[in-house]
Length: 120
Image 1 (cartoon, rainbow, N blue to C red):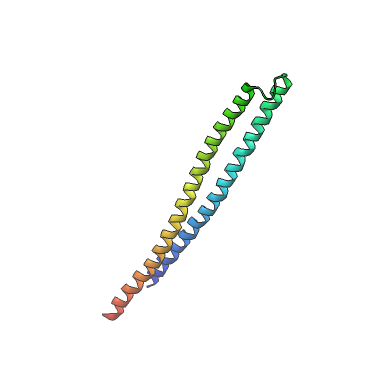
Image 2: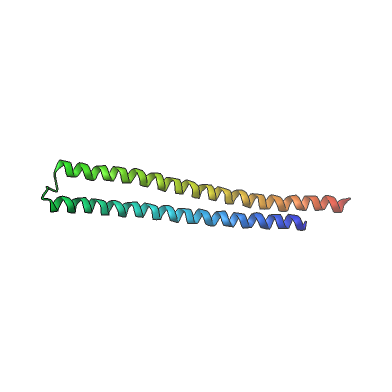
């Protein structure tokens, strides 16, 4: 029974670690999202500053195309990185659920074995 209790506690510990990893992963996904948005805003501001200093029109089709292309690239990369981070967080959460279940099963299995031992 003592071994089963130890296994159960170990699985609970691993479950808590996985749960914390999932929480950290979700925060990291939000941080990645915010960073990409800030970088895009900075990039577009720089493009506008350069074009303004050279006397180019702000509403020119070329300028708008350059900005749209930068936004498309940034949005694609942001979605990929945020999606990857969220998938990992979801996996960590599933790992936590599995570990909690394994902890219960270890305890239950230990109890069943000890009943059989004492019943003999």
